[in-house]
Image (cartoon, rainbow, N blue to C red; front, side, top):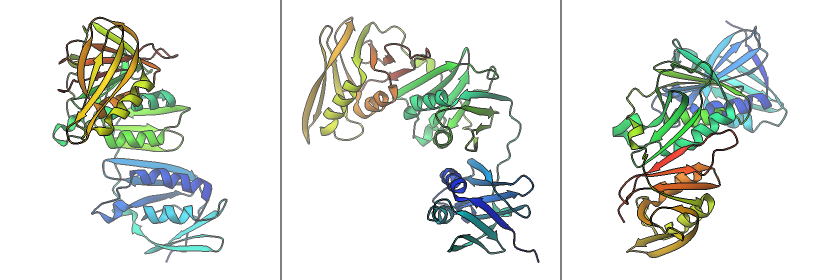
Length: 376
């Protein structure tokens, strides 16, 4: 019979590691071990690795520990996190795993938590990655935030349920749900040339956002089927969407002759206000762009009433245009756009509208957005 193996680590290291890894744990699952995290001890290296998985994404965090020997076991994710969170700040935590239960203690606090064997835990094989490169964390964050709002939730078109990442002269991130499209192009990192065009699932996009900070470098590795993202906080391994992303370039209008510049925050506030009487997510807002005048927003809900508002057009070129947009979609776009002023480039009332920042930012980057019209 083995002697108990005591694993000692600091609460201030264990708690954030559990908080991160728990985000990958499936809350509602029919497979009991998937509600657990895998704890793996490397005694010689003095490291404890914690892993959470939902079979499609795997998130790992590593922290320092002291232990008598190597060991691996699983514990319930939510219970373990709550128990550690409620331990005193600055506590040194001792964890002893036996056959059916693990004892977690710090000072006078003591928990006995049920163990499931590590052999039941499904770990993902990484395979071979064809490309690897470093990305600035802040740039990666902006890239994801600028386009993720346009990811589709429609299951029948599963290939739209993520961000399309591909390389040309630039590294491009694109998302669309058929009603709006967002694209962010960044300088091509060294090592990204020739990378496979991949679709990162919505779930993985959310976990990557939790993983990356605002500073430092993020290491990205990929193959045709998987992506791995490594930061100082941890490592994400995720399957990719197996599908073909549509030719989005055809959707981006190139010849719209009417251009109107408006302040982004003022427009977002106005769209939000007139949406007060809207009948739901699909309600239309009428945008009346007046050359040399104002932008008038109007909503009309037969069951609730109507609302209108005005926004100053800072600069206008071309003819006046009246067009309908989905108010919720427009507001999502405005919240993701970041820049102070946006240029709406419009054609006829039934054609897509191109929306871009008035100027590139200090790094020279300038995302673009496309919004499809809606009958009003």
